[in-house]
Length: 287
Image 1: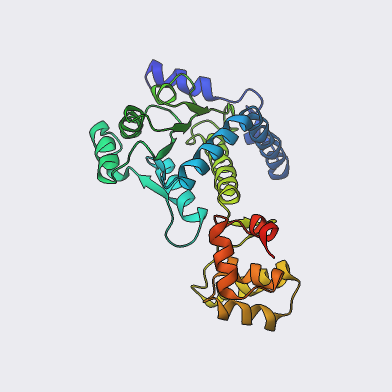
Image 2: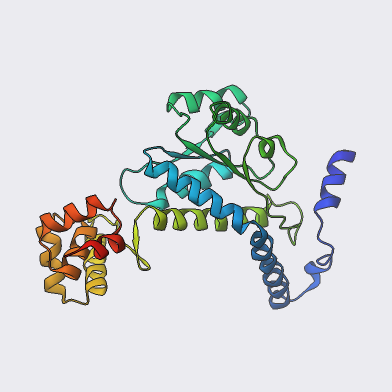
């Protein structure tokens, strides 16, 4: 092993877990669980920056732009998964994975050009190391256009961090066992992505109270979920909820507003459109 690799392993060894291989299974799990609690503590100082990311992304979407979440390798998988989990159906949050082009700076640029990424779009880059060429290329292209750029990274001194105006860099520390692929940093990345996706859904009118109201009846399961949400929001019977949904072509927001205001489907849909799809605001304007 090279001196460089020896240095990396030494740097990543956890000072408190040198004897973890001698512990009972339960004691081992207690050590891991206690150490995992440090992840949320590491994220806490970055909550104001995460809030900026959400507010910037919401403004981007509300003005017709797109949010591109980009990454390579496991971070690329996380990027595409975050976009899928943001909302059902077609929407302006796009996950882009480098695929096999992880080492190509030029392909990172080309991917952004292919999707016609522009100055009115926003980028959220995922790179634990901050040193992935494909991600650098994508970020530099977005930066060159003057688009808002945010990054979730473990290295605040990396080139990727220098290309972003919003840097989320929780220092989660070494894993309990050295040699894994930055497990704690990836857990932190997932937690932050969940915050951003949830916050963005709320800020773009996809949530009323604490319920998702943008679900589509694409399967029986989701049709039943729609009925349950209308019943809960409106305090109505199953029959009333089903009737409302059927009368508005299963547009969940419209059905919720109908049962809460006694408006018909056309009136409720118009009121929603006048208020950018926000149910709570539409309720304040309802006759």
